[in-house]
Amino acid sequence: MPPNRNAPLTDNAREALVEQIRANTAFEHIAISVLSGSVICGVAAFILRIAVALIGGRFAIDAIFAAFFSGLVLTLLFFLIGFASGAVVISPLFRFLEKQKRRTIGPYAAAVTAIAGASLIVASVLPGAGTPGLVTIVAVLAASGATIVIFTRRMKSIWAAAAAEEKAADARPITFRIQ
Image (cartoon, rainbow, N blue to C red):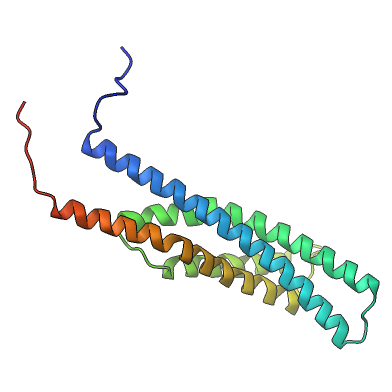
């Protein structure tokens, strides 16, 4: 016999459902933050490369194209690495911290900074990639910081709602059902 979908949820099932909804919502915020950060990374790389070309006296149409394609590649790499690490690192970190009811940005900032640093280190040891230049390092670290800020701003309302729901749950009287 199939389960009754209209039956009321047990407390454990309700908690699991709410936990899953919060995790899915957090992942959506992670993805949006990474997407925004990747755009910031590409734009920052483009602007910095144009500025370097202007300061160096090498400004020409080929410098604009080189800066554009460099920014585009950096945008794509930042998004791919950020999305993958969001799924593999940040989302499980959210679930772990949510169980402990620790809703601060510190662990997320540390994880994002570590992922950015590790990505730059890995990029420097790949064959044919070469050492990332100062423009790339600045763009990646600035975009990582922007990603952290965007994620924090988006998560504040969710963390406040979760805290209010827990406070309301603690204030409810305990009832017993006799069947």
